[in-house]
Length: 184
Ligand SMILES: [Zn+2]
Image (cartoon, rainbow, N blue to C red; front, top):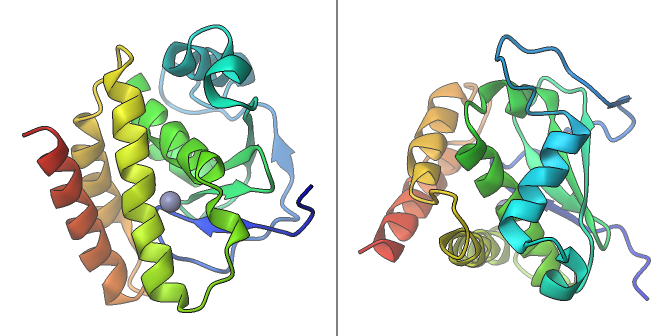
Protein backbone atom coordinates (compact mmCIF):
# COMPACT_ATOMS: atom_id res chain seq x y z
CA UNK A 1 0.00 0.00 0.00
CA UNK A 2 1.23 3.42 -0.83
CA UNK A 3 0.11 6.19 1.42
CA UNK A 4 2.50 8.90 0.40
CA UNK A 5 1.21 11.98 -1.30
CA UNK A 6 2.02 11.70 -4.94
CA UNK A 7 1.59 14.52 -7.33
CA UNK A 8 2.43 14.63 -10.97
CA UNK A 9 2.14 18.10 -12.33
CA UNK A 10 1.52 17.72 -15.94
CA UNK A 11 0.20 20.17 -18.39
CA UNK A 12 2.11 23.05 -17.00
CA UNK A 13 4.55 22.94 -14.17
CA UNK A 14 3.04 24.78 -11.34
CA UNK A 15 3.37 24.16 -7.68
CA UNK A 16 0.87 26.64 -6.45
CA UNK A 17 -2.33 24.74 -6.93
CA UNK A 18 -4.42 24.81 -3.80
CA UNK A 19 -5.64 21.35 -2.98
CA UNK A 20 -8.00 22.85 -0.46
CA UNK A 21 -10.08 24.32 -3.25
CA UNK A 22 -13.68 23.31 -3.25
CA UNK A 23 -14.51 20.23 -5.22
CA UNK A 24 -17.03 21.02 -7.85
CA UNK A 25 -19.62 18.62 -9.10
CA UNK A 26 -20.66 20.81 -11.99
CA UNK A 27 -19.18 23.86 -13.61
CA UNK A 28 -21.10 26.14 -15.87
CA UNK A 29 -19.38 26.72 -19.16
CA UNK A 30 -20.37 28.42 -22.35
CA UNK A 31 -20.11 25.10 -24.13
CA UNK A 32 -23.20 23.08 -24.76
CA UNK A 33 -21.45 20.02 -23.47
CA UNK A 34 -20.54 20.20 -19.81
CA UNK A 35 -17.09 18.65 -19.83
CA UNK A 36 -16.96 18.68 -16.05
CA UNK A 37 -20.11 16.61 -15.61
CA UNK A 38 -19.18 13.50 -13.58
CA UNK A 39 -21.28 11.24 -15.78
CA UNK A 40 -19.74 12.72 -18.93
CA UNK A 41 -16.24 12.14 -17.57
CA UNK A 42 -17.12 8.59 -16.54
CA UNK A 43 -18.36 7.88 -20.05
CA UNK A 44 -15.10 9.17 -21.48
CA UNK A 45 -13.17 6.73 -19.29
CA UNK A 46 -15.41 3.88 -20.41
CA UNK A 47 -14.92 4.88 -24.03
CA UNK A 48 -11.17 4.71 -23.49
CA UNK A 49 -11.04 1.47 -21.50
CA UNK A 50 -14.21 -0.36 -22.42
CA UNK A 51 -16.91 -1.07 -19.87
CA UNK A 52 -14.68 -3.05 -17.52
CA UNK A 53 -12.20 -0.37 -16.55
CA UNK A 54 -10.68 -2.39 -13.71
CA UNK A 55 -10.00 -5.36 -15.98
CA UNK A 56 -8.41 -3.02 -18.52
CA UNK A 57 -6.35 -0.76 -16.26
CA UNK A 58 -6.14 -2.68 -13.01
CA UNK A 59 -7.84 0.14 -11.16
CA UNK A 60 -10.81 2.43 -11.46
CA UNK A 61 -9.67 6.04 -11.90
CA UNK A 62 -11.60 8.69 -10.06
CA UNK A 63 -11.76 12.10 -11.69
CA UNK A 64 -12.31 15.18 -9.57
CA UNK A 65 -12.62 18.79 -10.60
CA UNK A 66 -11.28 21.58 -8.42
CA UNK A 67 -12.07 25.23 -8.77
CA UNK A 68 -8.84 26.94 -9.77
CA UNK A 69 -7.72 29.67 -12.15
CA UNK A 70 -4.64 27.63 -12.99
CA UNK A 71 -4.82 25.54 -16.15
CA UNK A 72 -3.65 22.20 -14.91
CA UNK A 73 -4.30 18.52 -14.42
CA UNK A 74 -2.46 16.02 -12.29
CA UNK A 75 -2.55 12.55 -10.85
CA UNK A 76 -3.08 12.31 -7.13
CA UNK A 77 -2.62 9.31 -4.88
CA UNK A 78 -3.14 5.87 -6.36
CA UNK A 79 -6.16 6.39 -8.57
CA UNK A 80 -7.31 9.98 -8.68
CA UNK A 81 -7.10 12.39 -11.58
CA UNK A 82 -7.65 16.04 -10.75
CA UNK A 83 -8.64 18.58 -13.37
CA UNK A 84 -8.94 22.29 -12.71
CA UNK A 85 -11.97 24.29 -13.71
CA UNK A 86 -9.71 26.60 -15.74
CA UNK A 87 -8.45 23.64 -17.76
CA UNK A 88 -11.96 22.41 -18.46
CA UNK A 89 -12.87 25.81 -19.84
CA UNK A 90 -10.15 25.32 -22.47
CA UNK A 91 -11.42 21.90 -23.48
CA UNK A 92 -13.58 22.07 -26.57
CA UNK A 93 -14.26 18.49 -27.51
CA UNK A 94 -14.23 14.92 -26.27
CA UNK A 95 -10.91 14.15 -27.92
CA UNK A 96 -9.17 16.82 -25.87
CA UNK A 97 -10.78 15.66 -22.65
CA UNK A 98 -9.92 12.04 -23.44
CA UNK A 99 -6.28 12.99 -23.99
CA UNK A 100 -6.04 14.87 -20.68
CA UNK A 101 -7.63 12.00 -18.76
CA UNK A 102 -5.57 9.34 -20.57
CA UNK A 103 -2.37 11.27 -19.86
CA UNK A 104 -3.11 11.45 -16.12
CA UNK A 105 -4.28 7.84 -16.01
CA UNK A 106 -0.93 7.00 -17.59
CA UNK A 107 0.93 8.58 -14.67
CA UNK A 108 -1.12 6.44 -12.29
CA UNK A 109 -0.65 3.26 -14.34
CA UNK A 110 3.07 3.87 -14.71
CA UNK A 111 3.35 4.58 -11.00
CA UNK A 112 5.18 7.81 -11.66
CA UNK A 113 4.40 9.31 -8.31
CA UNK A 114 6.14 6.59 -6.36
CA UNK A 115 9.72 7.18 -7.42
CA UNK A 116 11.77 9.68 -5.45
CA UNK A 117 12.69 12.67 -7.52
CA UNK A 118 16.47 12.75 -7.77
CA UNK A 119 16.40 15.42 -10.36
CA UNK A 120 12.93 16.86 -10.35
CA UNK A 121 13.13 18.57 -13.71
CA UNK A 122 14.69 15.78 -15.75
CA UNK A 123 12.74 12.97 -14.20
CA UNK A 124 9.51 14.85 -14.34
CA UNK A 125 9.84 15.67 -17.98
CA UNK A 126 10.73 12.11 -18.95
CA UNK A 127 7.54 11.09 -17.16
CA UNK A 128 5.60 13.55 -19.28
CA UNK A 129 6.85 11.92 -22.46
CA UNK A 130 6.16 8.44 -21.11
CA UNK A 131 2.64 9.46 -20.09
CA UNK A 132 2.00 10.99 -23.50
CA UNK A 133 3.09 7.77 -25.21
CA UNK A 134 0.92 5.66 -22.92
CA UNK A 135 -2.03 8.01 -23.49
CA UNK A 136 -1.70 8.06 -27.27
CA UNK A 137 -1.42 4.27 -27.37
CA UNK A 138 -4.59 4.06 -25.29
CA UNK A 139 -6.42 6.51 -27.54
CA UNK A 140 -5.31 4.68 -30.68
CA UNK A 141 -7.17 1.64 -29.34
CA UNK A 142 -10.29 3.74 -28.89
CA UNK A 143 -12.36 5.93 -31.18
CA UNK A 144 -10.75 9.12 -29.92
CA UNK A 145 -8.47 11.15 -32.13
CA UNK A 146 -5.22 11.31 -30.19
CA UNK A 147 -3.70 13.54 -32.86
CA UNK A 148 -5.88 16.36 -31.57
CA UNK A 149 -3.71 16.46 -28.46
CA UNK A 150 -1.17 18.43 -30.51
CA UNK A 151 -3.48 21.33 -31.23
CA UNK A 152 -4.72 21.13 -27.65
CA UNK A 153 -1.17 21.54 -26.29
CA UNK A 154 -0.71 24.47 -28.68
CA UNK A 155 -3.80 26.04 -27.22
CA UNK A 156 -2.39 25.62 -23.73
CA UNK A 157 0.87 27.22 -24.82
CA UNK A 158 -1.01 30.35 -25.80
CA UNK A 159 -2.66 30.49 -22.41
CA UNK A 160 0.42 30.12 -20.30
CA UNK A 161 0.88 33.17 -18.17
CA UNK A 162 4.01 35.27 -18.18
CA UNK A 163 4.82 34.04 -14.68
CA UNK A 164 5.48 30.54 -15.99
CA UNK A 165 9.08 29.59 -16.69
CA UNK A 166 10.14 29.57 -20.33
CA UNK A 167 10.94 25.87 -19.99
CA UNK A 168 7.20 25.23 -19.84
CA UNK A 169 6.81 26.49 -23.40
CA UNK A 170 9.84 24.52 -24.56
CA UNK A 171 8.57 21.37 -22.91
CA UNK A 172 5.22 21.65 -24.63
CA UNK A 173 7.02 22.01 -27.97
CA UNK A 174 8.97 18.83 -27.27
CA UNK A 175 5.83 16.99 -26.23
CA UNK A 176 4.01 18.04 -29.40
CA UNK A 177 6.87 16.84 -31.59
CA UNK A 178 7.02 13.58 -29.64
CA UNK A 179 3.28 12.99 -30.12
CA UNK A 180 3.47 13.94 -33.79
CA UNK A 181 6.18 11.32 -34.25
CA UNK A 182 3.82 8.66 -32.86
CA UNK A 183 1.48 9.26 -35.78
CA UNK A 184 4.15 8.95 -38.48
ZN1 LIG B 1 1.83 14.66 -16.96
